[in-house]
Image (cartoon, rainbow, N blue to C red; front, side, top):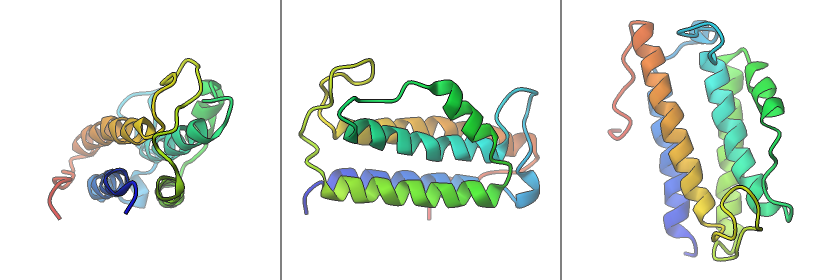
Length: 154
């Protein structure tokens, strides 16, 4: 199967994220460890929006959108854990479809983000970015007196 390794990376990235996020309940949606930081719901929304951002950047001939203020506003507008998890499902499904149907050896356009890199590098950007925020969420869980499950063990 073409792009099998990249598809596996996307799928396990989502699996690890959801396992870590399973420590939270809907009542935790608005928790933030410090004023001004993302809430639990906004962290997850940010991850979903970023998955979309990576895929859009790889498919748009103009490259990556750089309006990070709008991205931040959209993430912060999400106040429900269930809404954020639905966004995760949708974003990762779109990413899986893109990976399955794309020539990942094609080059990204010149620009500020991953200039002229193979499109497959976007997959690893998604994985790395998600892992970063998954780690933040485990700190949030600890601050709530919860323990996120080990992400790598089913």
